[in-house]
Amino acid sequence: MTDLLRRLATVSLTTRVAFGIAILLVLGGVIVSIAAFAYGREAARTAYDRLLLGAATDIASALSVQDGRPEIELPVSAFELLALAPEDRIGYRIIGPGGETLTGYSELVLPAGRAGRSAAGRQGEGFFDGSFFGEPARFAVVSRRFAERTLNGTIKVVVGQTLRARNAMAYDITRKALYVLGVSGLAMVLLAVVVVRSVMTPLQTIAGGLSARDPHDLTPLDTAVPRETEVMISALNGFMARLDRQMNSMRHLISDTAHQLRTPVAALRAQADLFADETDLSRKERIVERIQSRSASLGRLLDQMLSQALVIHRGDSARREQVDLRDIALDVLEEGDHAVLNPDCDVQLEIGETPVIVPADAPSLKEALKNLLNNALKYGCAPVRIGAGQDGDRAALWVEDAGAGPDDGTLADLGSRFNKGTLSRQAGSGLGLAIAHSVASSFGGSLKLDKTAGGTFKASLVFRAAAGRSS
Image 1 (cartoon, rainbow, N blue to C red):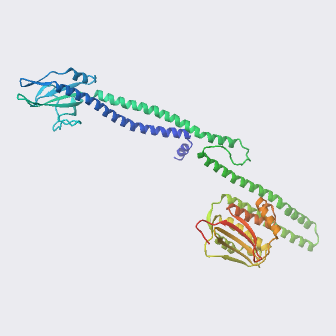
Image 2: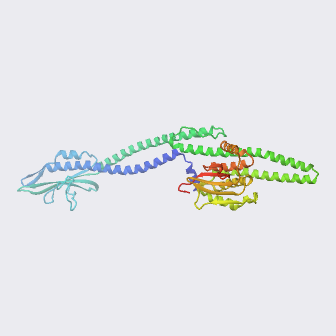
Image 3: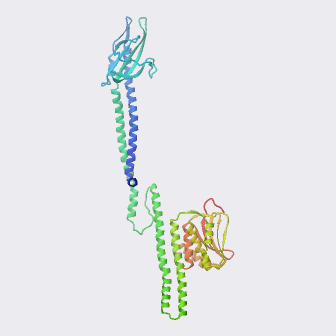
């Protein structure tokens, strides 16, 4: 069953459209055939009923009374009308006032309880179905009233014929309708094939453009396509943009790794060489301390670089969820990682009772807040506060310390590095701020570094709050 569904999924669009139209034509053909045959039968019945009625009326008009007895001279015109259906057998009967057969086939019997009123509403005229020597037939009845001294009563004229010409006419109408349906259906199939191939042309153009591209060319597609195909172009461009960001992140990570690790690794190697050649135990102990310090610094640098790569990746791939920034601040405080970095510094939490909701990724926000907190603990002054709040449609996740922060020139320089996207190459606190900036940018926000009126320094991740929330 799975293989069958997989094979059906690979069927071309042209075949699908042609098959769908074929099914539609078959169903339509059945319906049209039934309708055409019903219309043909009705048309044939109406036409030949008029011939029967005309012949019966001619015969009834030829009736006369002589010496108290009805006499008739069958008119030639009546049989000329009936001869228009040469393959049919015809029969007639003239019934006297007493029900006796005056002439014709006595086998033609009127149905019992017959009203004898035609569609025209004339009394004594009408049609009925019966058989003529074992063959289905159609009959017309015309009555003529005589009121004379020698003859007072109604004489009925019954004329009938078999149904061969009627059925042939109905089949002919049906056959011609099916001919028209077949020709129009074939034209529809051919037109559908042309239209589908025309619709596929832009896709072939896109495929050709992608195939001819350099593997490293991830620039947006700029191809003139119909509006219906623009959705796919937008999706492709969005996918290539995400892929380009991922590739840039990998290149930056490799570049940063090569740049940032070269000096610490060389210093560690130099210290190890000094340790191997040193004979003084006191100097060896100082070398070991420097090796431990540089190893710890190198470990922190690696952690930050890997964290930056992680948040950039999650910024493009993680699903946005409704995150309460208060929960992020509370989780970071409760995890207690800051106590390892600076156990003597007290970290305070400031959150309100109103939810602060933003569409983002919780792990990325936690990583960004941890880096801001670590920077405040390393380069700021106690006390350090973290919190979340909302002002209008702007929501913020922030870290504030009692230090004065960098001077205005350095602060402006940090801002310019953010905009150029090269902050990831900076050492020390710059890399932690780069992580926070990447997270803010990934979720449509920004990183703000401000000196407050109270003489403190505040780093904030500012986002647009979710709709329907207020402070």
